[in-house]
Image 1 (cartoon, rainbow, N blue to C red):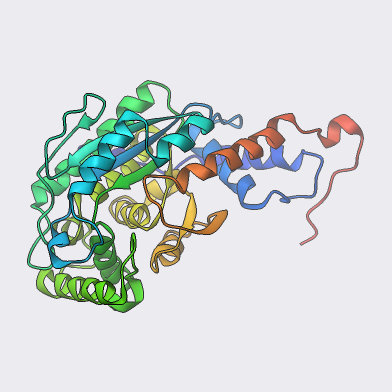
Image 2: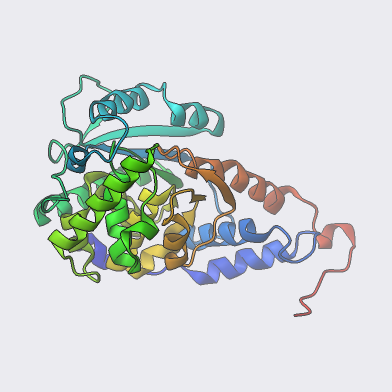
Length: 349
């Protein structure tokens, strides 16, 4: 955790320099909206007014969740291992998107409930799944800290290879239940307001899930202002690993994209540990899960994509990459006022 103490805010001077360059593009001021802001944020992270997002990666944290025993999912935990192996071998949903958007994909076993024979799956297993949060703590504090270290170490290794931007992803049957429990405490809302159907639940299944979330919060009684306690009591290894990715982004100067609601709750917890790490985050999309939008609002981040997405694996987050490529094309290639002899727009507000 020593590395976290080194986190400092991104350099806003470079964001302002990038804004000045945007204002020189021959178009109305700010007319490319949030995408202009995002490129400025990346400039602040990279400490240059010529940000580069050509080297990109997706990191998919894979783990199992003991709360599946409560009947909160449509499938059993065996699906986690199958999907994790598919991601590692390049045949899953995220791989299809990563191939066309030029991103490398790394699948990480941070807590799958079984051993998987797959050399391409990065083995960083902390335990064989988290414990059932509806009957006790998800993990020990030491295990929670270990999950953060996994994420930070991965960012370190990718930064050393020149990766500019990382998309967060996860695969873990049942992980929207700990996400709902964490969201309930963090946002101060009842379980009914933050619990969705996840990968697909009947009305009866949703009722079981809401009940499990309520019991988890009541039994564990976490301090809402203590992020590591929240992770250990109500979280999961995927969430801890993604927290490490967000913190690592701030430590090693890499922009990290939030995917869906599970990624978003991880980002909020990371920002509770080190508020300045928020500077290194971009919101990929607004999740279809009930807490998704509220968690992004907690981070004061806006997403460009609001498409009712809930696939996971980083598939929503990666869709931001081609939009950022479009923004970069305008930023670097479009004609400029000084080149074409058009009078610049001025800010009249």
